[in-house]
Amino acid sequence: MTGDGRRRRRIRVREATPADAADWVALRHALWPHATLRDLRATARAFFGAGTLEVAAVFLAFAADAARDHGEAPCGFLELSLRAHVPGVTEVPAPFVEGWFVERRVRRRGVGRALMAAAERWSRARGHRALGSDTQLDNRRSRVAHRALGFGEHERLVSFVKRLGGPRPTRSKRLRPPSWRGPSR
Image (cartoon, rainbow, N blue to C red; front, side, top):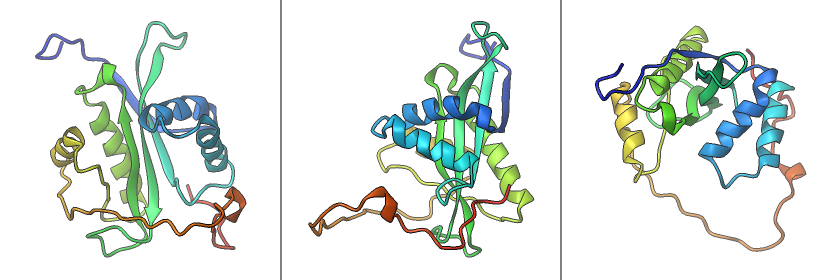
């Protein structure tokens, strides 16, 4: 039991496999409900296929769940990219936490910490010496969690966009380097 009377669950974290695609998509949709399931599925297919510029590694957390046949249910994820620019980091590309989510039912039980530890191990194994992340200015819980895991605040930013009009670009016009073959795993 934890100090507040909640039962501590065994948490297991591992890199996602193609068999995890549906669970990963569901967790991504919980974090980014504004995204369409179609787009989230397309990212998963691309990641498990040739790879994407947006996703370099995905970690899933599983907690014991008697309702599932195999006894575990996905309860969180952490998604890393490799960015050409990460504020405060001089060695690039650098790993960057693009998405970090833990279901409410298992929050404050070490799931987020376990996911971040997996991301740190993955990053160190590939020679990276820093890990970047960000959050919205008003997301106090995320800021507290980042600080608790050793992240230091580097900068605060206000983003601006000016709409230029004209037709919206189609998906096929997304820019990708001609030599892109996906992340090495």
